[in-house]
Amino acid sequence: MIDRQYIGHTMPPFEVLVEKGRLRFFAKATGQTDPFYTDEAAARASGHPGLPVPPTFLFCLEMESPDPAAIRNLLGMDYRKLLHGEQGFTFHRMAYAGDVLRFEQRIEDIYNKKGGALEFVVRKTRVSNQRGEHVADLRAVTVLRHG
Amino acid sequence: MTLPSFDALQVGDTIPALELPPVSRLTLALYCGASGDHNPIHVDSDFAALAGLPDVIAHGMLSMGWLARLLTNWVPQTAIRDYSVRFAAMTQVHEKITCTGQVTEKFEVDGERRVRLTLTTVNAEGQVKLSGEAVLALT
Image 1 (cartoon, chains in turn red, green):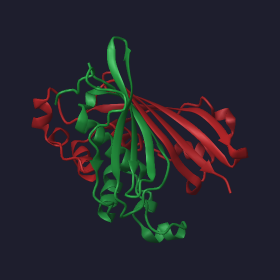
Image 2: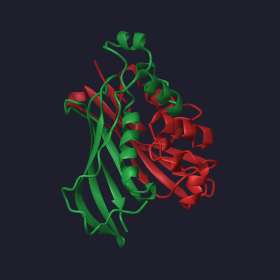
Image 3: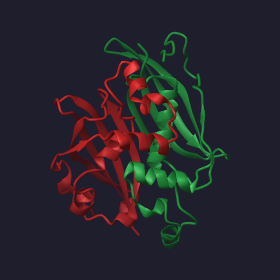
Image 4: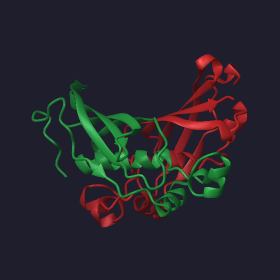
């Protein structure tokens, strides 16, 4: 059983640079053909300062943490028994190529279902930019299957 | 891109669906690199077999990325206030996925007119893989 004392635990914040090439690669991988996401001129023509970070790419940037396994190791979770159960985003403002985004992760909740056969870890991540502006809040639910 | 009309939209309306080509190994390899999710279960069929699966499975977040495309095909990204999904079933390689959205609520918050959509990805047999919702601002 995961130690419930970690409810409310915050992880060391980290910063990630949004790279233009990664955004274009992500557009290709997700089949995104709208030039708004790959062509800076098109993005500027729509009134944006550069290539935008698409909605779910914030999750990928969160995985650029210096130690992506930090929470897993802290809570003693075996990665072979983990499932991504839910993912959510609340957006406050756009992020763009060249931004340096700051990620602050907090373990929001830990609970179990089915008599403890399944344990759930809720992680909330606040994302802000290099000007301290609030970009988004991410919510991830990880499921740990026992047995 | 112009916003859909809040007044003209009605609860129950559907937005234009997004049909994806069958999930290929190349797509999964590209998403592995582009997303930074290097879990071998998505690209290495030997690893998938050892894990007891018939073949590699698609990244859940790839499907969530497709559903985001469904949204941004319909409204500018700046209109998205909230977007969440539950990963209900695994998406297998070769499956043909369709993304759909339907208006379930019209409401106003802080003087902003918003709609709530329910979202799903389904395979050709209609099995739901992801279910979610989004809140979009239309003013």
